[in-house]
Image 1 (cartoon, rainbow, N blue to C red):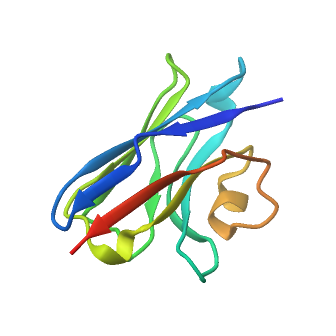
Image 2: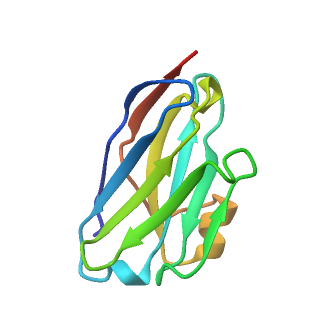
Length: 124
């Protein structure tokens, strides 16, 4: 069983930065593709970013490309999402996810594991 715990959310002004962290339990962390998703009030959960098991490949939603950076540290079982130039429309609950397939992660269908989320609020 894999458990994911997010941290780092909070309130920030537009134009500011936050770094989200996701701590992952389990000895086979390197086998999982990792991703970040978000869900704003009244909206469906959407893909934000993903990284392959090795960390060699990263993927981003067009809405965050150039502003957000996903990374992972396989030695520490950690995944990060550095968010810069934040906008009010980035306000959402942010969820960390793990799946054995990067394809499944990108399709956002039947993902294996989810964290409980951390709230990011960007004020204008």
